[in-house]
Image: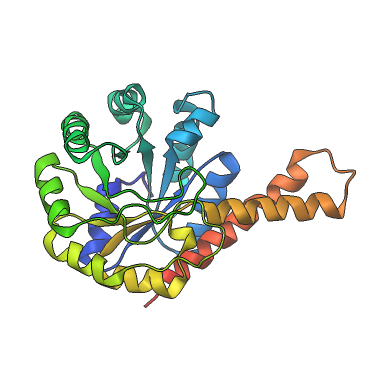
Amino acid sequence: MTLAATGALVDAAAGDGGAVLAFNVIGLEHAEGIVAGLESAGTPGILQISENAVRHRGGLHGPLVAACRELAAASSCSVSIHLDHVQDADLAQTVIDEARQRGTSSIMVDAAHLDYDDNVRTTAAFAHEAHGASLWVEAELGEIGGKDGAHAPGVRTDPREAASFVASTGVDGLAVAVGSSHAMTSATAQLDLDLIGRIAAVVPVPLVLHGSSGVPIETLRAAVARGIRKINIGTALNVDFTRRVRETLNADPAVTDPRTYLAPARDAVAESVAGVSTSVLSR
C-alpha cells in the first residue's frame, strides 16, 4: 500500500457517511503502534504530528515525518501524514515548502486563538500557500479548550460564522468547538450533537473533532452520524503508553534496557488504536 493523501481519506470517509481517525505521534514507538493498530483493525488512518511534538524534537519535523512516511509506505492500510495545530509561521512555511519531498499531505493552520478577522486573514494566507503545494488544509473556528491543561469547554463554533469562515479562507476541513476538550484523561465530555448537525448543514467541508480522547465511544459514533468526518485522538494513547511503561518498570525495578518497556508500551498503543477504530467505525 502506498502512502495515502489525507484529503483522499477524508473524502472517502465522508462519501460513506463515516469518519477517518487521526492519531497523534510523539515518537517512533507511537507511530509503529498506531500503524500496527490500524492494520489490526483493517482501517485507514492518519499519523499526525503536532507543533508541540515538533518542539519536543528540537524544532525539527523532518526526522519524525520521515519515519512516519516509511511506516505508512510499508503498511497494509492506507495511511497519511498530517501536521497538526501549527501556529508558528516559520514552521508552517517549512512544512508547505517541504511537503512533496517529505510525504506530508495536510496541515492544520491553528489561528483560532486570534480574533475572527485575524483568524480569517492568517488562515486564508496559509491556505493559499498550502494549496499551491497540494496540501489539504484544516483550520479551527471557536476555540477548543484544554491546550493549556485546563479542561475548559472553550468558545463554541457558530454555524453561520463557520460557513462564512470557510467561504473566506478556502479551507478543506474545519475543526469545530462543540464540547470536547484537549488533554482529557477520562471519557466524560458531553458533545453538543445538535450543534454538530447544524454546522454540518451549512458548512460545505468536512468537520473535524479535536479532543476526542475525552469523548465516550457511543458519543463519537453519534457525532459521526451528525457530520464529523475526521476524529483526532492523542491523550488516550499517551495514557495507555505510560501505564504500560509504569507497569513494566514496577514489575522489575532493575530493568535498564529501554526496549524492555518500550516494546510493551508500543503494543499498548496498537491495542488502543485497534480498539477505538473498531468501536467507532464499525457499523
